[in-house]
Length: 110
Image (cartoon, helix red, strand yellow):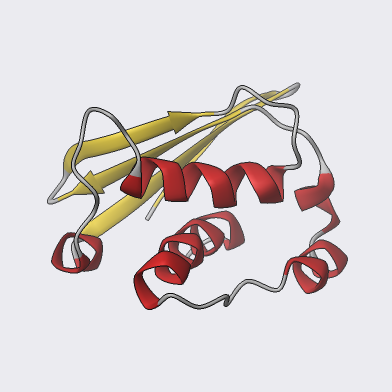
C-alpha cells in the first residue's frame, strides 16, 4: 500500500536528520500540492513496534508543510518524554497524522 504524501513528508523529515542532508524540496512540494500551504491543526504520532514512541501537536499557524516537517523532527528527536529516535527504531516505525479540518477529523497511519 502506498503512503499518503503527508506521511511521506513526515518520514522524509526524519530522514533529513538521520542522513544529515536536505531531501525535501519545499517549493516543488507547494507547487505540486497546494493544500500544503494551508494552516491546518494537526497531531503527529510516531509508533515503534506498534507502541506510541512520541507525539507532536501543532500550536502555531504555520503551513501544513512546515508543521509536518517541524513536528516529525521534534517528535523523533526532541520529545522530552522519549529518547532521540534511533535508526533501527526508525526502520520499525509508523507515523500517524491527525488533521483537524472544518469538515471533521482526518487520520492516516502508515
